[in-house]
Image 1: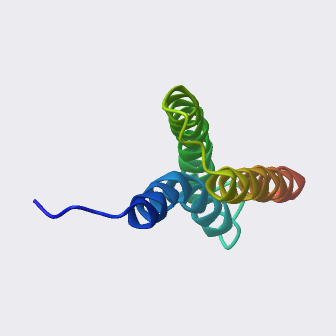
Image 2: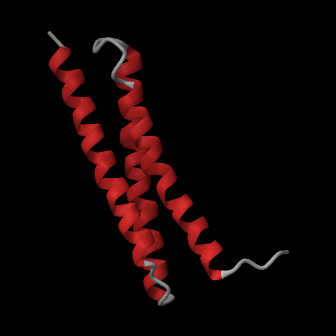
Image 3: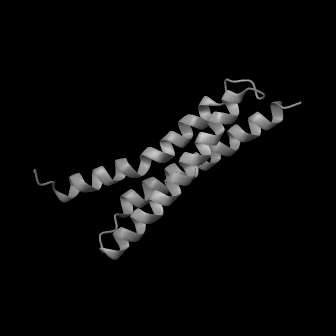
Length: 103
């Protein structure tokens, strides 16, 4: 087993933290090309909501664990917060676009 340095562990934690918000953004953007009445739009928006919720749970658990270990990385926390807020706005924008197309 190779030993990782502290900076490598911090980078790995950051990657694990931002996978779910990026997936949420990707699913929200994937819903835009479809017709608002199509199952594709609502399925991708559902997956976007699911991965957004997963991102919140993973982020909070990671934050609590890092606080308990006294190993909180301000850089990782800031990048995750920005990615999570961005995923919320993209999701809300996609929902607004899908709802406004419904007649």
